[in-house]
Structure formats: C-alpha cells, structure tokens
Image (cartoon, rainbow, N blue to C red; front, top):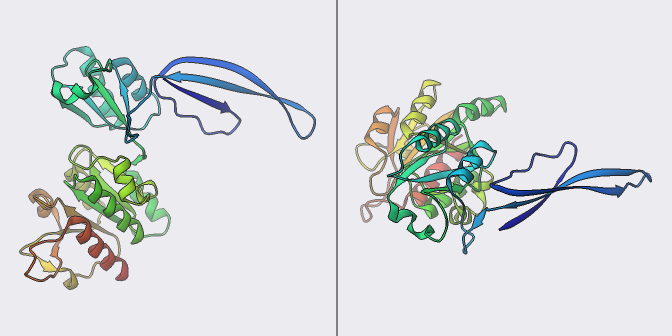
Length: 296
C-alpha cells in the first residue's frame, strides 16, 4: 500500500491520483506571518499503486482500478489485457483507450504470469513517467514560437537504450519533438530515461496510432519528409536540409518501412567506409541530427 499526503491550496496544480482505495480528509490550521489564521484541507490517500522491486515502472492491477485510472488524469504508457477477455468490459476499455489514445495490447496469459501474485483480473496498466503530446497540437505551437518545426520520427525503434541515446542527441541538436507509434516502439521507462541522460524528461514525445498516420499528417501540412536508408539513396551531404523538416529513422533490422519510404520526399544515406555495412541507429541518428543542426 502507498500513502500520499496532498495539500490543497489555491492555484495549486491538481494532484494526480491513481487508484484510490481510501481517503481521510482533515483541516489543518496554521498561523500566518500577519498573525491571522488560515485553514488548509489535507487529504491522506491510501492507494493500491504498486511499484516493482527495481522501481523501473509502475503498474495498476485489476479491472476497476485500471478503468478508474483511465477516467482520471493518470498518464498511462499502455494497458495489457488478456486476449481471451470478452464482454462489456472489454468493449468499454477498448473504447476508453481509443478516446484517451492509450495503447491497448492484447496478450496471452503467459505474458501476465509474472503478476500471478496480484489480483490483475486479466488487466494491467503501466504508468508513464512522461507526458505524451499530440503532434497535431505541437507543430502549430512550434510555429507560434517563431521556430521551424524539426520532427524526428522513429519507425520501429524498439530498443530502450537506443531510444534514450537518440533522445539525448535530439535534445542536443534542437529537435522540436520525437514522434513514435503507440505499439511498435521502445518503452518509455526508467532505462530509456537513464540512457537519455534525462533528455526524455525535457524533449516533447508525441505518439500516434501508427507511424503512417503521423507521417501523413506532417506531409499534409507541408513538412518535407527525409528518410534514412542504406541503398539507392543520395548521400547526406548532397541534401540541403534546412527549414521545417521531418527526419525518419528506422529500426536496425528492417530500416524505414516501405510505406514510409514511398511517402518520403527524399531518401538519403550516410557516406561511410565499405568495411562496415551499417551503423547503430543511435549513432546514425546523432550524425544526421548534427548535420541538420549545423546547416540550419
């Protein structure tokens, strides 16, 4: 069990409350420097928020607690649901996840077996350590700041350490935001944040249902799409990448997807020695982002 003490004061940001089991309320009287007395309401909240032993992520277990989290302002990274679960609850949580843009991942029972000592009822929510932004709201905001949007899209990058290292380079080279997909992307957890040297806590991360959905939006508002590839592409030095732009990096095993390449305005590669076929995606991203930074 976790106990939280929250002071409610005027103009204070509303506290984020997770799965509330029990609330004790009391009024606290304090003497001000003026000699007057004022009252502050205190809530002691007992919750069933569960931390794993390694403090790597936080989970919420059970059907009602997870639904309560969706109805509140808890930031959720994803929700795992047993793939055999059917009925009104499955429909309700599916619709709620779509509304809140939280990935709902159907998994076999073995996936939830590590939580067998918890009463998860076939539903486990993972709390996100960061706020995810909406790309359709973020790009206009960047323009309002008098800046050219510089969006980095990660297409299928699933390794958390690569993701963190890329975010570190992105922050160093003035990337406006990182765009990932809801399902086929690295988890945003403590390992990713550590690998990013805290950059993931500073740079906006946007999430769309699919990378194609995000790319189509960025293309529709006139942002040129530059995708990295290994073959049949111009070299990075041949491109004049200035102004508003979108740079797409793919996974190390598959690269940028064929569908995204077809939507790209330019496809490029990093010139390198024939002794090595390719670079690690985080290293390649650092080189490309630096090139964009110095040529801006």
